[in-house]
Amino acid sequence: MTPLLKVQDLKVHFPVYDTGFFRRQSGSVKAVDGLSFELHKGEILGLVGESGCGKSTTGRSVLHLIPPTSGSVQFKGQELDNLSRSEMRAMRKKMQIIFQDPYASLNPRMTIGDIIAEPLITHGLTQGAKATQAKVQELMQTCGLDPRFVRRYPHEFSGGQRQRIGIARALASEPELIVCDEPISALDVSIQAQILNLLKELAREKQLSYLFIAHDLSAVRHLCDRIAVMYLGRIVEIGSYDQICDTPQHPYTRALVSAVPMPDPIAERSRNRVVLTGEVPSPLSPPSGCHFHPRCPVAQEGRCATEDPELKDWGDGRQGACHFPHKGADSA
Ligand code: SF4
Image 1 (cartoon, protein in one colour):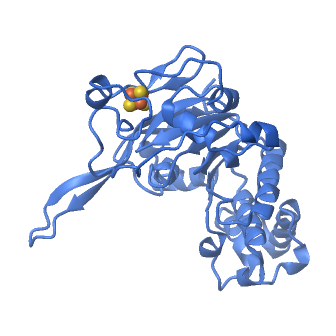
Image 2 (image 1 turned 90 degrees about the vertical axis):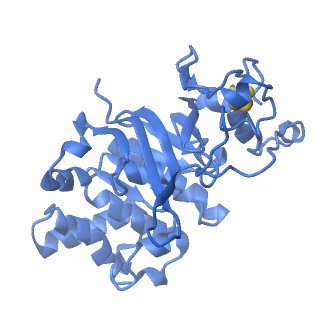
């Protein structure tokens, strides 16, 4: 079956220029460095990693909001690079994004009715003002917003309500894929679960696919079917929710899993936390060999510092990039 989204060897490199008179290119920041994954209809794929690992750039690049340096992005079997401007506009309707900061992503001068109506009008999805108004109200209701507030402005809403407005706007064009770029990380903890539940419900009802970007596993735990873990512009492990959360094999995944608090106080007390030292290295000059080796708690001399591990099939449907993956049954 053709995947809804197929990404192959995606690279996004940003040139860096020196400060001299001729401003020659002195290097490049490899924000995304050879990513491949597939996403099927109705599937939720989590993309997880620390700040600066390239996950947001990946999300934007998949939608061609940031042009890829190389590689292929296919949506429903069509190569996005080959589409004309009008074909791309039609395709955009089916691929939407929800941003991290609902404050910054909503035009403060527009009423929320106009914000939600904009994609309906742009893509000609409703005929006449009355039908548009009715659709806006329906979308507001679907997303848990009171339709009586249609003439209010974004600043009159709380953070959680503003995120609901962003979701209603994304839903307006009847998308099949939504890139959720850390949609709950700017919200209060008490509100996060409500937004996650809304997204989960919408995915189930409307057969939506999400590329759900998050900086830790706790956000994606109860939402995703599969999880891809990113480190310094690359996927280091990708597998089902159970594989990644219950039997992580890559040392970086094991550290991320060990950082997730457990609801059971007894299990929480015996949680074996793997604390990583140091910061994520700069993607301008990544370490030699395995990019994770300066921080890896189980790095081995020689091979880890000199040989870059490829993303390989690890035999149980998951893929990983490590010379010495953990094969035990314990969770972390
Ligand atoms: Fe750690 Fe070596 Fe595996 Fe890299 S290849 S994650 S340094 S054990």
